[in-house]
Amino acid sequence: MMAELDTYWVQHGGGDPAFWIRRMTNRMPVVHLKDMTIQDHNIQVMAEVGEGNLNWPAILDACREANVEWYAVEQDICQRDPFESLAISYRNLKAMGLQ
Image 1 (cartoon, helix red, strand yellow):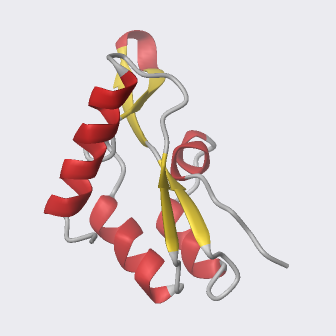
Image 2 (cartoon, rainbow, N blue to C red):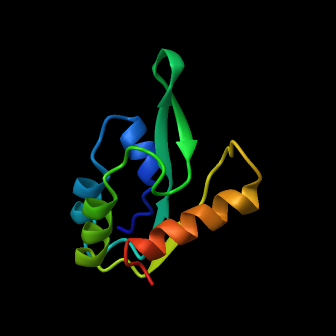
């Protein structure tokens, strides 16, 4: 069985994205990368990768260990221009060592 995990929705549901990525080792060629921030009244909001509270070092290490081939950066709802959000995520992922 293959999987296609979304980091935001795993975190939103109370799970640990890195844990679940590792559980899918060799069965998940693509992972969807989204970040999360907490706004007023504990509302969870999608954010650019690296701009929220997800543990990106652990997530990216888990992706490497699980042999993830493709990283799909997406943000269902943007707080700014979608192309600006994509550029921010791209720059942050490069700074984290993802090439």
